[in-house]
Image (cartoon, rainbow, N blue to C red):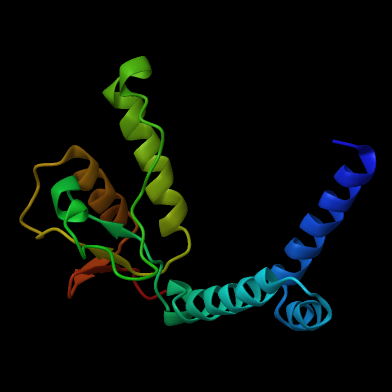
Amino acid sequence: MTRELLLRLLSILLLIAACTTTGAFAASCAESSNLASFNAAKTTATQLELDFGQSLPWQRGESGLVIGRHADLSTPGALRPGEYRLNWFDVRDSLGDAANLSVNQSKIDSVLDFRLPVRDASPLSDVGSPYLNLERSSALGRQWFYEGGQWLPATP
């Protein structure tokens, strides 16, 4: 490719990026452009912004974190819109189970620091998972309590 063609391509890509990232600017870009793809990009970006903005868990006073056994979290519909489960690079093969539990401890602690409710997808009587047990005991150790399928911070 020639330098001129590369520069033209780069300017088009930058224009597309600018048009799809900000709603107000996207409208003016789409109006001033002859490319039909800008209209589709503008519509998609607007829809994503609205859907995302309406489902932020912390806007509802929730952390969005769901703890539970792997089997419970893997079932279809286990995670509601805006919810997530803890995830990390598994270090069991290289560093062992204790290291993997330590990573899990660090992850749950960082979420609990926000003092927002954490949903528990597994029955409270289910104590067969060392990871779930660790997550629950972390909440209990901070004086959190279990109510209605959620772990809630104690009122100060």
